[in-house]
Amino acid sequence: MSAPDTAPGVRSAGNSKAAESVAERELAEQLDGMAESAVADTRISDANLVPVLRFVGQVVILVQQAFDQVLASLIELSYLKAEDLREARRTELLSSIETILARSRYKDVEEICSRLHSLSDLYAQSVRAKLGSLADEAQWGEVFQLLHEHEGAIIHMVSGLVGNLHGQLTQAAEADLPAIREQAAAAKEDLQRTLQQLWTLRNRIFGLSGEAGLLELLVIGQRSEAIAATADRRAPT
Picture: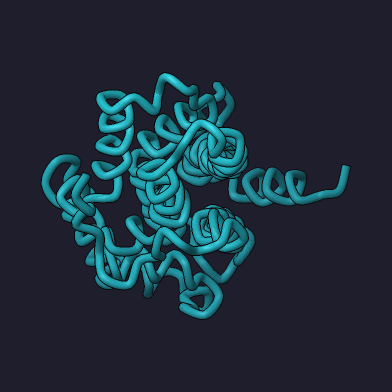
C-alpha cells in the first residue's frame, strides 16, 4: 500500500507505545478544564460565558467526529485473526488506516479543516477577549495547537494511535498477531476513555442527559447552580 498523505511532522510508525494517546487525552482534559475554569471565574459575565461554552462545545463535537473512525479501526485490529492477513483483507485493513491518516479526509471529505479554521477565527475574533486572563496558551496548549495547526494537529494525534499499527500490519505474520492485538486494544481503551470524557463534557454543557446543562443554567440566570455543579463534580468521592 502507498503511504498516506500525512501532514509533515506527524509521529512516525516507529514511535513507541508510550508516546501514544497522550495528546488527545491532554486535549480532552484541557477542554474540560477550560470550561470549568471559565464557569468558576466570576470575572467573566454570564453574557460572555455563554459564547465561551458554545465554543468549547463546538470543539468537542469536532474532535469526537474526527476520532470516530479511528476507534472503529482500533476495534477491528484488537481482534485481528490469521485470516485477516490474507492479501485482500490485509489490503482492506491497511487502506482503512491510510484513509484516517490522509490529509484529504479532513480537508475534503469531512470538512474538518474548514471547520477548524472557522473555530480558530471565532476564538480570535470573539472568544479570547471574553476569557480574559484564562486566555493562556501555555495553560491550554493542546487546544491552541489544534486551533493553530488545524487538521495537522488531528493527524498528529491519529498517527500516534494507529501509525505504528499500520507499519506492523504491513509486514505481519501470524506470530505477530498477539502483539498487534495487544497494542490495538490498549490504544482502543485509551481512546474510549478520552471519547467518554469528551461526551461527558458535551453532556454537561448542553444538558443531553435530560437535566439542565451549563448553557441552560446561564441563560436562565442560575450561574450559582452552574458553579455548584462544577464544584460537585470536582469534589472527591
